[in-house]
Length: 90
Image 1 (cartoon, rainbow, N blue to C red):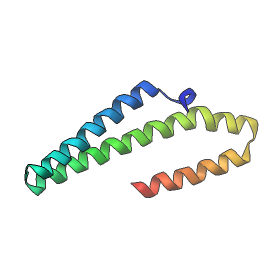
Image 2 (cartoon, rainbow, N blue to C red; image 1 turned 120 degrees about the vertical axis):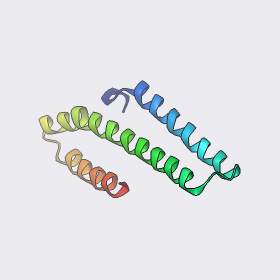
Image 3 (cartoon, helix red, strand yellow; image 1 turned 135 degrees about the vertical axis):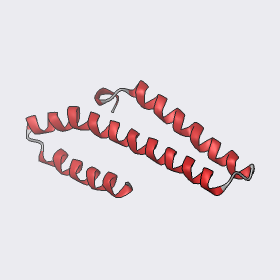
């Protein structure tokens, strides 16, 4: 996986998401208004979706490109399943 994406970028993004989730957890304890909690949940979901997009782009430009060049039908089929799973998470 490291060969097909910028792992430093992903780690930075994931640490930010972890911080957002921790902040949401604190908001619950601090009795913050529901609207504010929901806004932060939405921000964390959006950030996590962006991480998925970054992983997907790296997978396409490296792994899938190589699989197509090799004619690796199994890898291409697995990619289709991965796309379906990712799309269902949206």
